[in-house]
Image (cartoon, rainbow, N blue to C red; front, side):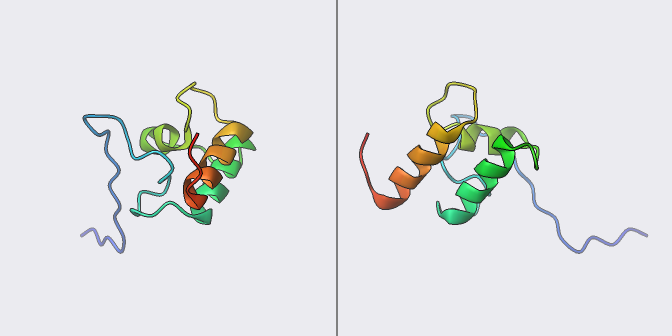
Length: 79
């Protein structure tokens, strides 16, 4: 038989994604920033939901601006 120790399903939401919540845990924090940096430096490859949540300005490019916007979101800075 098959034994599954851990299963996490990420899905494409009907209306976009939760911007900044890259790891889909319901909290935007430094772990999400680390994930975005890993995607930028190509040490990890995002799945659809992660790419959508990482692209804070919706320009279809993951870069330092997306990191800055997540930091602003964490600290409550309005843009």
